[in-house]
Image (cartoon, rainbow, N blue to C red; front, side):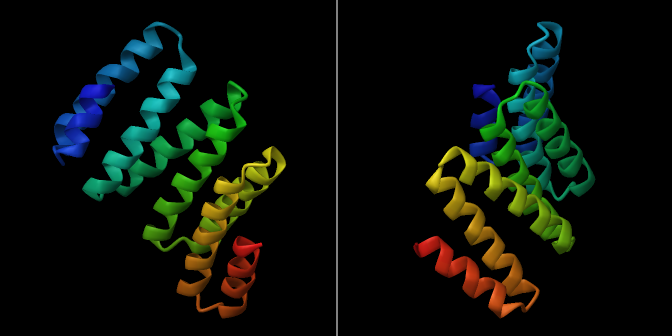
Length: 145
């Protein structure tokens, strides 16, 4: 997976995709669901960078479900945030808000303040796009408390 990350850092997206797919196949062969889910997160980011939105959404959703299957709720919260980011870029704002709110709930339950602030920021930006200024104000106030 490190080679895939290097290719991503170098913005060599197609090579990154190839490497990530190889890594995913290896994790599948080893029946390592957690490792596969981590690769799916990276695949989603690479697809997003290429504007391949359908594949980005599918990778994000698969990583989310896999993290939930292996009961890694914090990674699932991060996956929800990533899915929300892709949905915002697609203009599917209501579903993005649902993802961010679900992620926020997980982070709050875990006491993860950094995760909470990140999701509140994402919610604020999304409400700003929706021109729901009161929603943004609420998120900004919560982030500072």
